[in-house]
Image (cartoon, rainbow, N blue to C red; front, side, top):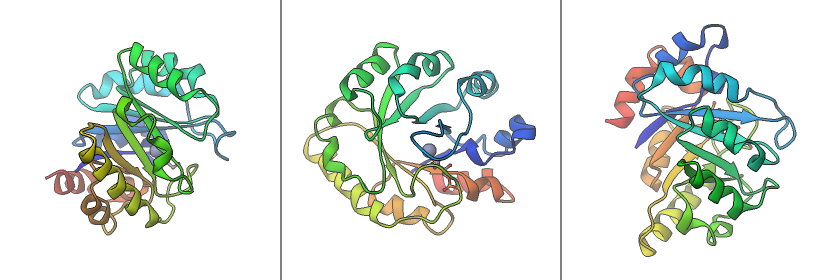
Length: 212
Ligand code: DX5
Ligand code: ZN
């Protein structure tokens, strides 16, 4: 399993140093919140653009928690996203948004909130590069892991096998030293980890242990 440290929990007064503490990870998770789709505001494309050249080796995994993602796909593609993930519960047309992401040469992901069943993804799974299962209500770091995400991960894994598809299965929210083995055993490929890693004394050691 790979790790995507979520910079939502980084120290923004020394962002580069803070991300450096997690720089052994393969991915970097960028949580964008608009205060409308979720009850919190984080940061936008200009922050991502500034950190992009400093972490060239990391795969930038952008998670858009915004109400009309299609309006901002080009901005995030230009700001160096490798994966762009948006919510199925947002307002943009799903197929048009996936197609736009692909037309810009980026990988496309869809995320589902804790109350959303993964079978709503069936019409899109053959076009997707990533599915992001939320294991907390999106909006804030530091919440408790919701175990109903585990069945969704297993369902996505068997659907992928049965239909010979390729999307990555990622999980986001409440993943720490105790819960990461649960998502890994259920079939998660990419664990998003925010508060646990950034509060840890040596995040890069955890990342090496988890990515093995
Ligand atoms: C929640 C965010 C998460 C969050 C994960 O809306 O999408 O990425 O940063 O944070 P932790 O690991 O603290 O739950
Ligand atoms: Zn996220």
